[in-house]
Amino acid sequence: MNGPLLRVDDLHVRFPVSGAGLLGSGRRMLHAVNGVSFELAKGECLSIVGESGCGKSTTALSIVGLQEPTEGTIRYRDQLLTGPDAPSRLQRAKAVQIVFQDPYASLNPRQSIHTSLAAPLRLHGVTSASEISDRVEVMLNSVGLTPDQAKRYPHEFSGGQRQRIGIARALILEPEVVVLDEPVSALDVSIRAQIINLLLDLQEKFSLSYLMISHDLSVVEHMSDRVLVMYFGQIVEEGGWQHIFEAPAHPYTRRLIAAIPKPDFSSDEMAQKTDPTPGLPSGRGFVSDGSNAPDVFVAPAPSELVEVAPGHRVRLGLAD
Amino acid sequence: MTEALLDVRDLRLGVVQKRATLHAILKGVSFQILPGEAYGLVGESGSGKSVTSLAIMGLLGKPLSVTGGALLFKGQNLLDLSKREMRRLRGNRIAMIFQEPMTALNPLATVGRQIAEMYMLHQGKGRQEAQELAIEALASVRVPNPDRRAKDYPHQMSGGLRQRVMIAMALACDPDLLIADEPTTALDVTVQAEVLRLIKDLCAERGTAVLFISHDLGVIASICQRVGVMYAGCLVEENETKALFQDPRHEYTRGLLGALPQLGSRSQNGRRRLVDIDSIIADRSKLTETSFIVPRRPQGGQA
Image 1 (cartoon, rainbow over the protein chains, first blue to last red):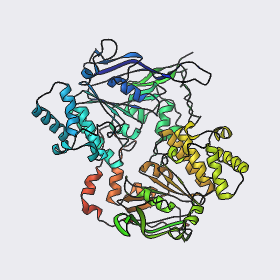
Image 2 (cartoon, rainbow over the protein chains, first blue to last red):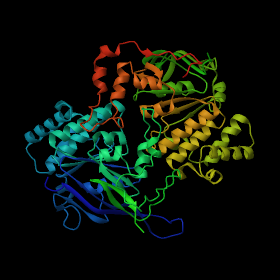
Image 3 (cartoon, rainbow over the protein chains, first blue to last red):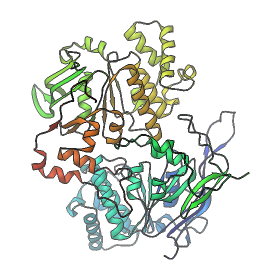
Image 4 (cartoon, helix red, strand yellow):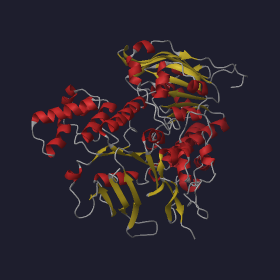
């Protein structure tokens, strides 16, 4: 392994909050992403989990280039994707692509599937009509659609088929990194299984690296190699899927896992689990996450990520 | 044996035009809900679970119409009631909560007023008393600062709070049956867990029966005692929740369970491939099996 494919260092994204705050006027900033750093290796599936508003989608959009980071760097194969010398969106499109949650909203309703899939190829200098047709055909086959469907329009497809088209469009430029933003949450249960299977097959076939954004932890456990848990713009826990699901250390991670309604009839033992994680440095505690107040969040106090096992890091409060 | 609170008998409904059924949507659905029981209906989009609940509420709109069967609520056929009688029952004895509380609440009225309306309409309370009862109702669904929150408009509340308001409204008149149609689908996981717990606790406390509709088997399992699985307008399997999950008999139920990635099911040496239900459906022979409706255990036995 020669270095990570994608490297994010101390990423910050702030948004100005318009209008007056509770205490009168003044321009307040919302710190959507607050110092996020991680690496994505070749062929790996890394998931970012967390609830609405935790900053997971903003992080993903920064990586695709749809959101300008306020601070921090993003590197792809040692090439900076941020800053003044950053490549254009067109250039970075060959490396990083995205599959959106709602495939219907992300496909142009007035373009046939062929036109939608051919557009990125044309933009990247493929001009021969026969080569374009060939590549569209191959791509449609790999996502489980038939080439004759290329003439149709998005409304003629079911939700699952549309998501297949969304995946085909993301993969047609042969990117190495694919950001999956809630790829299955808009789909029905049975279709969800098909798309998950397809994504895993494609990952193996093209040795893709996935950065998946999801709030559905059962899907995350099924697909990921590593998991980042985000809360309030920060990573609170990071580790292999076994670390996160079998030995979650941070109270927020435990709360997230306990919140999933499970058909296995065990009680909420995960939330009550209080045994300290082995390797937790003495004298350091978790920062309160405001979990006692329903629907109200409290921003966490200063803290840092501490390694508790190889590859397993947890956010702890600063030592006094 | 206790008499069923709601007895759905061979319910059929479809798209009806000029007295001719153009398209059958429910093809004879039968199930019973006992007083105080939580019954779940699971199925994919289009399986007919939501129209079943709308039929019970008498809220089917054109061109949908009931074409056969009976809906016995406390022994009375809901299909025979006049619109006026149905209105008196709806919201009072049978209440409903919907998936998206923002579209179900009136954006132009404070939530306190909307809850108070329930007491004024169904119990003939005066404005002042109804307002106080509304604040109590908000407190019962664990809304912090209920007296202040009662003055809020729906858009000032989070999704979780709005759904709590819906629950307060639905339970205001102590209905016998609460129909919950995907009430937590639009919510975050931790908020979903709180709302589910709230529905479960409040209904157990008041002895309210629940018809819970969801596509999420996990949600159903965490709240219902019995489950019916719907597929293409038919109830294909019904059993006690635990038995259904541990020993699904119908091919479709097995497919539905296998299609879900389940937490804790991944092992160190690889993942299980998820079941593709379409391949089961494509194999029609498997689905022509008769449905598996397991009779309820006699009362008195350890349920």
